[in-house]
Image 1: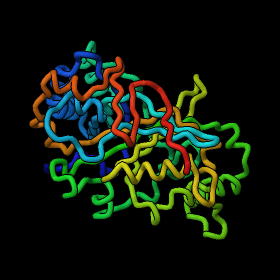
Image 2 (image 1 turned 90 degrees about the vertical axis):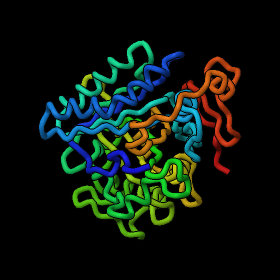
Image 3 (image 1 turned 120 degrees about the vertical axis):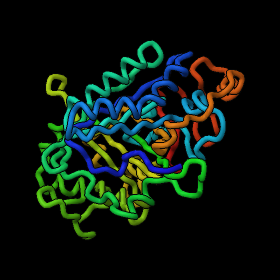
Image 4 (image 1 turned 60 degrees about the vertical axis):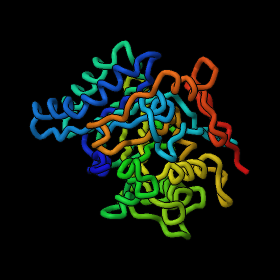
Length: 341
């Protein structure tokens, strides 16, 4: 379908993430915005030279059925959620994700405000997170984040759908989660113990040797040599007033199965570790999965579904719960019931 959206661009100093749910009857307004959004982004970006303003727009499973007729991305489904013995990853509502990024926050905010104005009365912004660059691409735990992102052709194959789903080639899947850090507990650890939690050195960002790296360290649990690669676009966020400090986790991949396997290992454990020890200091509070179409998708949107087709795809329940056998999804904050076998 042509050029992908700018998911492989380098991280920018500023970002705003908007997660949106579509109100009943709001589909026509949303379709109009999706068609106009590339032009709106260009207009705002032109007014702020050097801002490098971009917006990666992604669509959830239930929303795709409500907005479009015809084929659907083969692996698009709702985020399942994970319930471990000690930690959980909730599945939370989200029909649309707007990943707005640029060199300056004013341009990002102008586009976010424009999106909000256009969706007023037709959709609800259920989460707005303002991300920022923190020193040398570090998170608020003080460690460099995203070192193992693939580069070059490996990044393309890791992030972009190929010929296995020809209707949606050059699209991607993205999982986003908000993690809140308990910085007091984290800072109480020595630097050496923090390094054992992460699996890398704090200052130099070197991976620990196999002999030094615990099996429950973040790096060991998420071994990409074993699980496959994804493209992370994580950003720190925080509020000094509210005492909230966290990481907005963003994982683009050619198949959501790769990211989901990593999360399953983090929360449900492996043969060597009960769970990823970073979860003792980072709590997941949201979780959603979306399809990121290629850029050309918005130039010629698929037809809207007939009303009868939309009704047939939805369950009889009032909140649009859909079950596909492998995943049970809803618009509630319920936690997925996947258990470790």
